[in-house]
Structure formats: structure tokens, C-alpha cells
Amino acid sequence: MGVTKSAYYAWDRRPESNRSKRKKELTKKVKHEYFSNRRIPGATKIARALSTPNQPVGRCSVANIMRENGWKSKVVKKYKATTNSNHNLPVAENLLNREFTADRPNQKWVSDITYVPTDEGWLYVAGILD
Image 1 (tube, rainbow, N blue to C red):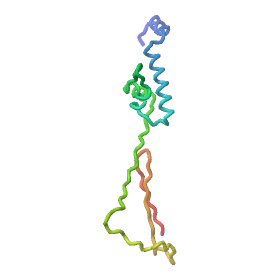
Image 2: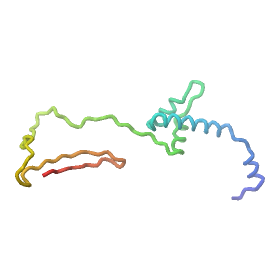
Image 3: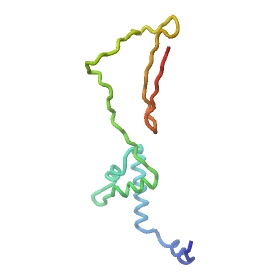
Image 4: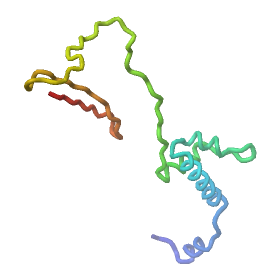
């Protein structure tokens, strides 16, 4: 590696720097704050929670620590209603009227759809019953 033995041993015997000690301590605090809040908060909220008037904690420092350790905040989106039932548009007539029994196949069909959230996006599931 192109390093002399004496330089390696000098580096090895050197005491830990204050900066390294502060970073290890901050990493412990960030880890505790992150996992005690169910891995939801991001760097901004963690930095705000750890900051005191005497010792401020920077958002970028927290973000770097989180990036180095692979900690990412969970994004919790608010519920958004997508159905508007208050309208004057025509509504399809209910032909079955909850009468689901049939004499033979292909007389009455019912279907429904739903959405399933996944890590890769939404999956759309459709079901059809004869």
C-alpha cells in the first residue's frame, strides 16, 4: 500500500480524535432516536430533536450518518379520499338487487376491484364471480 512500517504503527498507536469520538456519540444518539420512533423520522426531525441551545446538531451531519448506516425514513402519507359520492351524474341501476342465486351459469356476474400497496407501487386486483 506504499506505507512505511513506522507510519503504520504511528497511526495505529495514535489516540482517537475528538471529532471521531463526537461522531460515534452522535451516531448512537441518532440510532436511538431513529429506532425509538419506529424508523419514521428523517434527518430534519432527528436533528431538531437532538439539538440543544448549548449544542446544536446539523441536519446534514444527521443525514450523512443515516446514509452511512442505510437508515431511511418511512414516508407516512395522509389519507386522501378519491371517491366523490355527492354528484348529479347518472348511477347504474342495481339489476341483481342482492338476488345472487341463479338456475344456470352465465346468468349473473358480479365483480369488484381493489388496490394493494406494495414497495414497487400499487397492484390492482379484480375479481369476477359467475
